[in-house]
Amino acid sequence: MCGVKKRKFWDHRPTREGVESKRSELRNILHDEWRRRLTQPYAGLRTIEAVRPVLSEWLDRKYGVITFRMTQVLSGYGCFGIYLCRIAGREPTSACHHCDSCFEETAQHTLEECPAWVEQRGELVAAVSSELSLPTIVRSMVESKRSWHAAQAFCDEVVVKKEAAEREREDSAPDPIAVGVWVAEGELMALQLPT
Ligand SMILES: [Zn+2]
Image 1 (tube, rainbow, N blue to C red):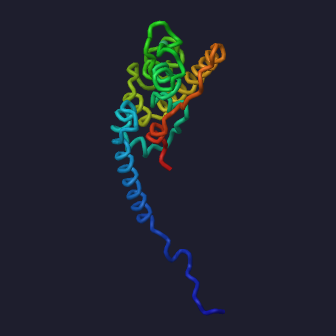
Image 2: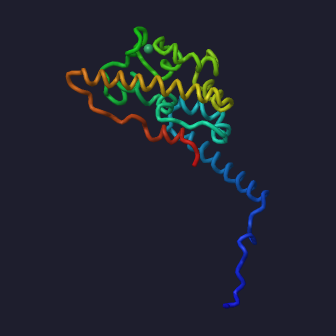
Image 3: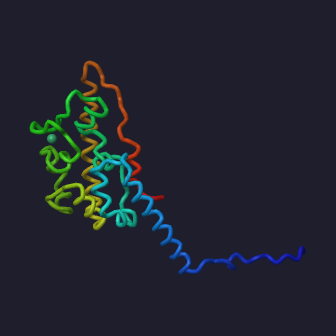
């Protein structure tokens, strides 16, 4: 025997209060960091305006994953005419390919206006509101699991269809358009769950 008394592992076991205090401290650090990040210019203004008012609720929520296709709709970086034409250079015009009335297709047009997605929009309207501005949707998502799932289902289903339509256009184009970068890294960072 070496005579050294082994320290019991529970000698320094933290108390429940200690754990909660540390957790609260880390949460505050995390929130401050995300508030700082949301002041950076790399994150899209539309996304910032939607998330910043409910940042604490967004970070503290107990449900809801962010899929790649949700990120496209929330950030506007994805299969929308204005992005594909002006930023990615993959389309000759910014017009919506799914209706005849939109010459500048944005993510918001897809979310709120495009008649092609009336059916997919039904549950989103029922869960959130008939007013589907991004701040309204994001606030509802953090307040209601149903809204979160409705937004996720809308984004996933619609973007899958838009991606398929885009592939068809590329396949039928005489000179295939080069594949570009789909989502700006900064936009993704602004939306990811804390780890
Ligand atoms: Zn449209």
